[in-house]
Image (cartoon, rainbow over all chains, first blue to last red; front, side, top):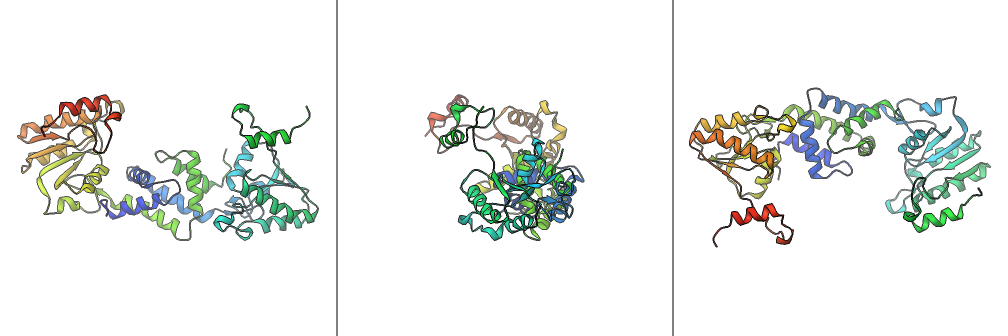
Length: 199
Length: 199
């Protein structure tokens, strides 16, 4: 049973459909939208349509972009011989924020998750293989999350890439900088010990 | 510095503007909108425009509605001689869910909050006074939150209403049903003791 006007109820339902937003939060958000100054609600709606209509995947690296090729792939200052493979577009942002990495990326848009029926065909793995097959790539860095799905995906992809004679690496596992040994979990500690380097 | 396409960045900013939504959540929501099936994003945008365009305040009780007068005020089954005064439209929903109350409502759209410069003119108090002045009202129930702002607002309103010879009441304070005495705070306990009734 609904106690709100139909239009408000619809908006609440739309907000409640978003991830991490429950019915109560959706109500609060909908009330906020109603209280927005003239024009703001319109520009919110326009932003949804605009993002949905204009954002697509870069034809090279599959990252989100509003052009045919994303600025990173289009830049001639980036080293095209190194490809950093990430699961999501937001991971690209994490690397770019560091301003350390100068290669290019490849966004898989997910990881292999048999539990949720996400197989190789649901990811952009074949696009990665094509890129490497086209030549000019010397190293592929697997920068996926250090969990079962991420490691499986990295292993699966690296097996497909090895035949092309490319070097496949993964990020180092270890103690996060600025953290405390006391709070490091066993798995991380054992990986850090395994990967120890000479000083 | 932005690493996302402009259209996506705009959508993230719009989501981040919502109450309780930080930058990270806004990113997640924006990505979710991008992943919506064809037509869903459009209907989301349409819901915002529709709610914003068609939802207004009932000319009688100031509750949100899509008609000139809300269904509760328009119903001839409701007792128009009792007005329950609430701060927000969602409070009406709380009462209606209980199906116990058969009177009508008056939504103030806030409470007096001098700290945030919200005074009597920012609320729908004058509309309440006009309703009572028009006659036919026997009782006004103040159902505002039991905090400083709520009590101040209730007190202020009741002083304006008293001259019309109307009975002004407030909700009972006490132990919530189903709760545990052990966890009741001092203020609640003392109010519950004060308002004790004979069995």
